[in-house]
Image (tube, rainbow, N blue to C red; front, side, top):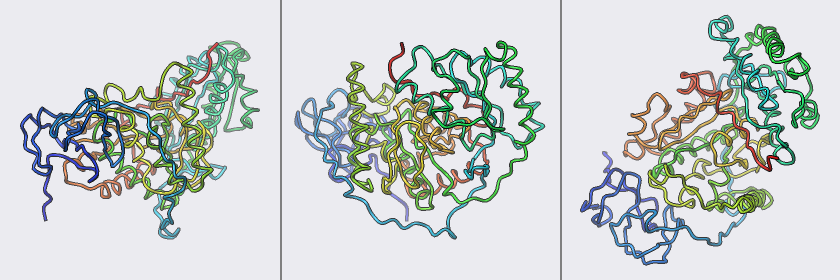
Length: 508
């Protein structure tokens, strides 16, 4: 039986707004809601379905997304001109929605082709990495990487590449929490299963001393982890020669890596959204949530981040926390962010970004309600600070900023070995050493940017697919990509510039 395609999308019977499925001209009759538009409504934007008085709450997803700034008539556009953010108390109801999960039995669980490392962890790619302790050694690291161009790497077909991941931190009075975060991030990348081996290059006089970092993070030099400084090597040219020599010795062994059949319980999926629009919480995010549920039920791990972008919707996560202690860990991170932004003369409500608003999102509450949909429906089993090792199986949360590269960097440092990134406006994020699959929220953008987008979730909006069907498609794509199939960003060679450790704390 064919499906009737409506002009608008209603997300809950309790909502007093609906979302335009496509552009609506003024005086358009919306039969399913029994209203006529008063003005033009852009795709993904909201239209009122009933009279809303000034000061009344406006609901979407059966949740409050803001307060009416003025009286709003049925058929009127609801956006930044007549909807404002307001504080309101949230009832966290810790662990209220925890449920028994129907896990797939091990003998029936999905599998992928992974690379088993000597410590038992499993990678989805096989890179050699060059990391830097400080910005001052970034140029040398890049010089080393450039010595391994495609013609040289053709001799080593099982090695995905030699990649230099540099940053602009590590000195300038780097101390306290800022030093902790950069050290934890570098430690996570140094031991990441997507790297066969890593070379760390420092300058020698920076605040983030390599020896102190390795002591703090319990890292030990080995045949897979080399570290040295430019000053002790005799300068930049000598340091570059030293790095090249080390990597040439590593390549033959790295090339012996083979993929073997592994359960998807070895996968840690980083969940990210960027360049969101009014369809993000309707199509790509809930579809990714359905895929995350499939991964968790198959024994794997899905990690949600971006604390500022779950702000206002965190109560939906605390209800799924396996214990009040886990729920409180999330609330503690929210409160830390409230204090952090206040100390920097900002506020948590300064979101969404201009592109988000152009796409139909109005307040951080609305954006967050859509963002948490990426986390699916399973129990929240743990909450991690930035770049901490992810040790629990199941659905977890990591405290990361809303800035996409910094957020994903933290989750990768924690052990994520594949990323799914939803976007409505067209973010083009690529990742190394962890592949990034991009999921488009709407068909027009997907068709316009098909060389960047791996999956079109816009057919949910178009009415030709369901969240569940698309979730299965995403899950299968995750398995294929984890097994070696290249993402669109990998085909384009993207991913080196997206290594962005979170810079937090005073820069002196």
